[in-house]
Image 1 (tube, one colour):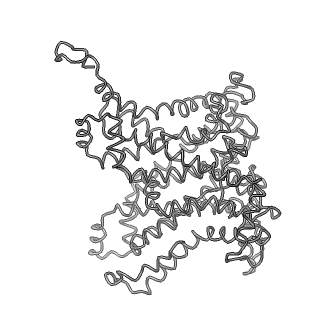
Image 2 (image 1 turned 120 degrees about the vertical axis):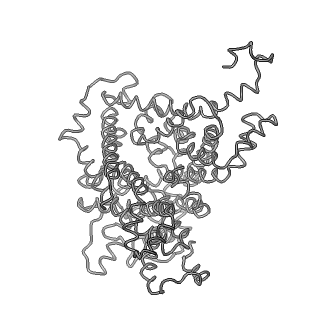
Image 3 (image 1 turned 90 degrees about the vertical axis):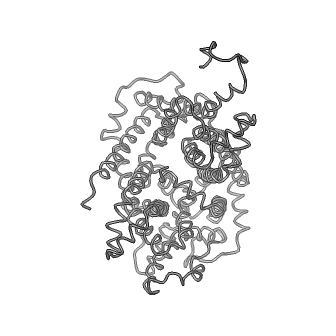
Length: 313
Length: 298
């Protein structure tokens, strides 16, 4: 750009590679992201929005789509489809797994931080193991534990005189069984998140409270919880976004229809089946956008609840 | 494999004994219970993989290791038509190539955002962060269609590792680290010495950011190794492309059936989990700090 005023510059080579590569290097360095995003992000996103208003199977070939207006959305929100049911299942499993996760993770992190700090590394490592483990492999182990006639859970139940539970066979039981696996996988993750939040709180605050005669419970209620709000917001958001897209655990524990009565059919599974089993891409795209809106609405609700003045807690 | 924390309790107890020992009993009981519940499924998968198939479901259940490891390996080779090693290699290949390409492209972009001033930098970086808000689920269908109808990559491993090579999370992680760990003077000095911009990245920057490369590397490896839905959608289901999670799905998915070779399946479960355990136990600090880095602002 400085080339525009050649008269003011001292005579120099009109083009130098050194100068050229210095100016364009940063653009070159960041360009791979934008190239990949254009092909695998932006274009698919727009195409998906386009498809949501069309009837199309990939077997029809590119170009042979039929415009149907809002029909896909109407069908999904209508009474005949499984979409509402799958959304209800997803929310129910999300609540059953999400709320206990935070109710356990928060006190666990508090205990580790205040009473067992020397072993923080060891505890974090052990509690984090389930999170990094392959969901498919873990689901197989849990399916074995849940086995109705021969699983360890019903064996242990039998020892104390309980009747065998149909963990993955009884539609009323299925959401609890799936939620237990999700809880097991993510409770350590949340504990570690809360631990890193607790570490950011200054020791001085606690010392001042101790001087003023505050007990452990008061410190937790009046210092830790309020100062942990940003981390809680973050952790809640991740739980909401993750739970609403739950796929691998129920897909593996049950069949792809979500078990008997479809009690474990989540929205992500329903969309997957519609797209890749029934090859109804337009309808599946419409449902994925509806699910996106649901995730967005829940995140906004979370945001609203956290941004309100929480001083009277 | 994992040491119980109690063993470390002895040294240092003198410095702090504000509380009586008996008050700590419930705390320790709770923590040990939590740790027990975390590791017991791992323990059981190893126990089951070492017992004959029929004994995975016996009463009372086996709680100690058996001697059928070799038998279960043979069973696994049988149920996978001898493809188990190939499946392991397919998973490893995708995980390794994902890791290497992600490290290269993300560190390069992160370096540019951390150390250069260029027109549009702020907007471009904000755009990259913004893409993290798109739920992956919305992308599943259209990405498949791009792979299927445009690129014809369905059924090929590259469908799994190419799209994520330069990803927002990696670039963000790199930028944060590089802008706080590398002095700009160092870059300037190298430039004065006549190094090219890429030469500076390769010879000055890369050696100095090894810690964050390790962090992003293990996180990427674990994510790629565990990628089930991607492999499912991109149909890596032929004998020469099938990955371990897909193979597990084929053998052990759906409702529990006692007639299949459960010893062999548990062997495959163990084979899938062992590399994760090794990576995690060697680099748990990097994995944890990398995965939770989104929570720590600046």
